[in-house]
Length: 315
Length: 189
Image 1 (cartoon, helix red, strand yellow):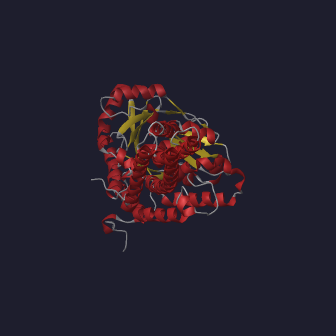
Image 2 (cartoon, chains in turn orange, purple; image 1 turned 60 degrees about the horizontal axis):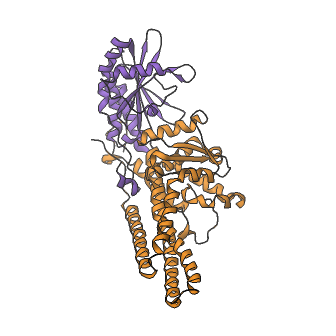
Image 3 (cartoon, chains in turn brown, purple; image 1 turned 180 degrees about the horizontal axis):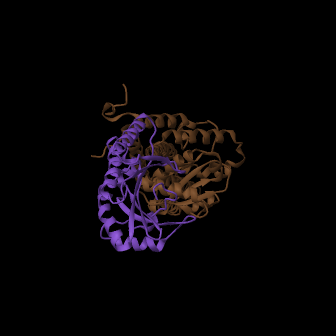
C-alpha cells in the first residue's frame, strides 16, 4: 500500500488546539461578562457590529488585500511562468487553483488571502520575483498555497473576532461612561457598570491580541511544513526565507508603514526591529522556521525499512 | 482533505492514485480504430525529486529496473519547472508493456514514500497526418485528459474535445477543463 514520509507534528497541533480553545473561551467569557455588567440594550448591538466588521473583513479579504497592496490579478498570458508553477503545485496538492496577483512593489513578499479556497488569491510582489530563483519562488508559493488549504484567513478572522468585539466594547464603554454620567438618574451605578465593562474589554483585548499572534505563528509553522512536504524541497523554502528576511532587515523603513496592517498574511513580517518581538510578532523567528525545515528535510532523506534493498549500495 | 485537517493546519500530502492507468491499452485500441491515432510507444512519468539520499537511491533503483529489459534505455531529463521526466520506450504495439513500465516507476516511488511527488504520466500518440496527441494522467485526481500541442505553444482544442468524447467510456476523463494544463515540450510527445 502507499506509504508516507509525512510525520505528524503532534506538539504543534496540541499547542495550536490549546490556543484556539483559549481564544474561544475568552470570547465566551467576554460575552457573559458584558451581558452581566452592561444594561442589556447596549451589549448586543455593539457585539453584532463588532462581529459584522469581522465578517466583512473575512468576506471581502481578497479585494481588500489586493487593494491595500495595490496588486492586480494577472492572467496566464501575462505571467505564464508564475501560472505554470502554481498549476503544477495545485495538481500535486489536489486543490483548486487560486487567482494569481502581482503587486508592483520592491518589498520582497508574498501573501495569500480570500474567504475560501475557491475564492482565494495568491499574490507575489515584483520584489520577490526579482530576488528569488525559480526553485525558491516555488517554495514560497507552496507555503502560500498551504495557507489557502488551511483556510488561514477564516481561522485568523474567527480568532481575532473576540479582539474586535472587545475593541468595539472599549469604545462603547468609554462613550457610555462619559454620557452616562450626565442626564442619568442613578448615574452612580451606570457609570460603575460601564467602567467595569471598559476594564474587562481592555483585558480581553490584550489577552486576545497575544493569543492571536501566538496562533498566527503556529499557522506559519504549519504552512512551512505543508509547503515543504508539497515541493519536497525544504531547503528551497529555507533559502528563500533567509533571502527575504535578510533583505527586509537591510531595506530602510521608507516603505514599511504603508504595509503594516497587512503583516498577518505575509510570508515574512515587514517590520524590522526586536521590541517585544517574541510575544507580538505575527511570524515565528527565522531560526525556528529553519530548524523545522531541517527536520522535514531529515524525514524526507531517511530510508524507509532502515535501508535500501539495492545491490550497488554499500553500507 | 477534511475540514478538520485544514483547520488544524495539518494538511497531509495527497497520495497518488494509480488505479486508472491500466485502462490505457483499451483506450489505445479505441484511438486507433475510431480516430486513426497510433501509439508512438513512448511514455513518460513526471515527478518531483525530493531532497536527500533516500530519493536519489530510489530513483537509481527505478532506472536500473527499467533498463534491465532488452529495449532502449530510460531517458531522464529535468524541465524548466524543476520536475523530472523519465521517458521509457517500448514497441508501439505493446501498450501494456509501456503501462507496466510506467506502473513500475509509480510503485517504486510509492513504496519508498515518495508517492506525493508524482505529478503526471504521458503516453504519446500520432496519426497519419503527423498530428501529435498526448494522454496525460493526473496522479492526484486519478483522471486523464488529452493534450494536442500545435506549433508555437498553441493547442488543438477541437481535437482534444473530440478525444475526450471518444474516450469518455474507456477512461476517467478529467471533468474540470481548467485542470487540463498544457505540458509544453514534454519529453516523449
